[in-house]
Amino acid sequence: MAAGRPSIYSEKLANRICTLVATNPYGLPTLCRMYPELPSRETINVWRWEKKLFSDMYTLAKQHQAELMAESIEEVASELFENAYVDALGITKIDAGMLGHARLVCDNRKWTAAKLAPKVYGERKHPEEKPSSDETLLKIKELVADLNKINASDV
Image 1 (spheres, rainbow, N blue to C red):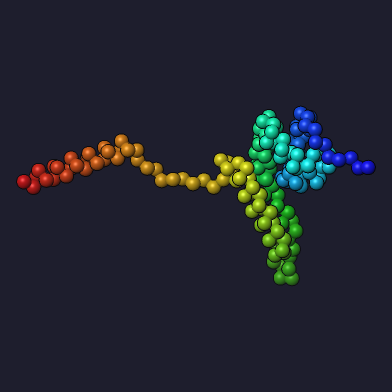
Image 2: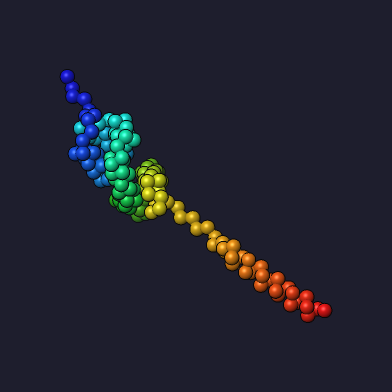
């Protein structure tokens, strides 16, 4: 009879899970397949919900994972160029299928990193600077004073 996946929470197992998450660019389903000693992803998700300390550790591990994903994009591009070939005319070319795969991997990692750590890897939106209400009121008063001067000089 095969042993089932562990489902009893322990600090040691929690640390193992978080270490694997923080040091791999793979999601939880893949990690659970790669490491059969881990509990099921459903069990891990229940622990994330029920155990505050584990939830906090897991969140931190995912932020570290975002850094790994962002850093690994360069490796994907390097591997792509390592597999380039030179055609009969001496032109270096990259297989279109490999290029598409590399683009998909890079886009996925960028998106995931942006969702896991939006302050670091998310798109930065710079809203236009809006003057405060005090500044706006001051400008209106200055305009009114200027208009009063113009009107007074017309009389």
